[in-house]
Image (cartoon, rainbow, N blue to C red):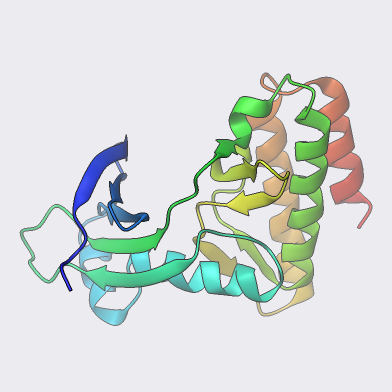
Length: 193
């Protein structure tokens, strides 16, 4: 069996690069953010790719959708600019929820995002970089989380404190992007849980 061949780069930024392969998978190259922390962490299976792989599994376990996690690998070379690689399934016909702001689907998407934040917190976990920029909507209106680096909590009270931080962050990040009605709905759903 031949190994998958890259087709095209679908995202390239300072912290990561996503490449689509001919077997309908995506390989995310994760670049280290902090030296020496990220260089040392990868040898203890705490690389970005390993955290996202485990996070996707945890989100799937509580009924939330993510691209199917396939593998997490580290780069052993201390000279490599890539810390680790995360392979996942490719999501065809999905729209980044960020682009649905100010459309007729805005209220539906924000409601789903708020309800899923409540669900994560009730299971004592939360996506670290929580927001509309890290979720996609399928053609059948299902929410799929694409950044799955998850923070876990030992107690419900710690999770609820973190939730307050995420609500504040969501409000600050999205106040110029989504309507006041959508933001009010998000705050109502997340604060009344």
